[in-house]
Amino acid sequence: MKDLESKNIIVTGASGGIGSSIVDKLFHCGANILASGTRIEKLEELKNRFNKIKILKFDISQVDKIEEFIEMASNELGGIDCIVNNAGITQDNLAIRMNIEEWKKVIDINLTSTFLMSKFAIKKMLKNKQGKIINITSVVGHTGNLGQSNYTASKAGIIAMSKSLAIEYAKKNININCISPGFIKTAMTDKIDDKFKENIISKIPSARLGEPEDIANAVLFLASSSSNYINGETLHVNGGMYMA
Image (cartoon, rainbow, N blue to C red; front, side, top):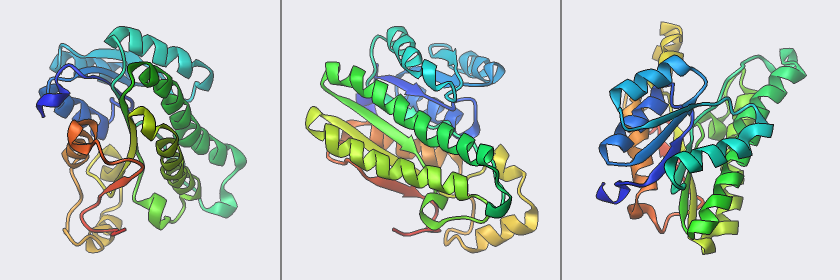
């Protein structure tokens, strides 16, 4: 997409499978990218593959430093046209065994930090009179999932929050949307027991797990001018597992 050339885009969680695929797609569309994550060796690998990108190690759990991170990223890029809030964690447990730390850690990182990343990015975008925010959620934020009451709550919260932000800033030419992946082939799904994986696939009409590239393609669309009249929406990429 030619309209992404030279656009300044932040991608968080870039050291993971989906994040690195997003960086790959955006890079080949000519975007000016700052890739962020917690694993510096993975970020350096990305830098070696895509030499023009910028990298910045950052842990989004450091909520008191998020404003500083956005400022640094904006200075590195020369502004912010788009941010892809992809970073997040899981810490699974059955509800009666889940302690408050497990609950709070997932909510704080997945929801609170995504809110703050969006908030401070919006402040930059208001000065530019335009911007795009893309928040990565999950199919289980719509369906619920065994042992993931904290994770599903955080992902459902991102969806509702994004709708509110979209209402607040649509008139300022800022589009805020979500992408809700289904089960995607990543290091996380590689660890799933084969029988459980077969059970998951049996519930997917496309009869396969998704590829990180499937999510990256959705990011390209929402980051581009092709989506300018789409706001407060969630784009489901799950092979038909969940149909809204």
